[in-house]
Length: 107
Image (cartoon, rainbow, N blue to C red; front, side, top):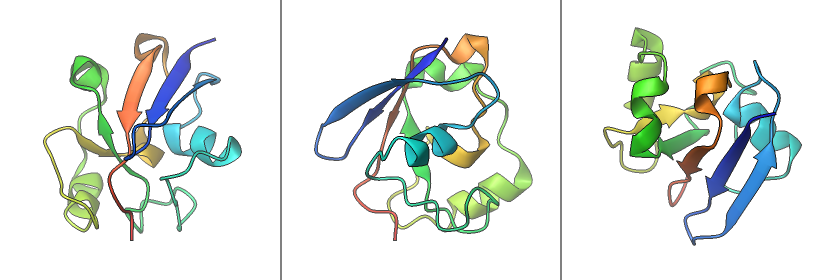
């Protein structure tokens, strides 16, 4: 089973096992990870599940679609080249060991 490491803005690290096909956001909410709000529940309507993906994993992600690109323009924290919405990161074998960092704020 793959795992994801979530790193809070303050540096607190939590690693959890996740099922293939689930999203980084779903697993954060299910496991009480602070820093991912997910107000819209994963409908890509709020940008409150914004994360910074570790650069080692960027090339393993699906390309950013037009909707995600638009929503990333509305994040509360700075958008960076490695910014993604965690509701759009579906776990697959090549993402095993994924590391995401939460921004300072989501709202």
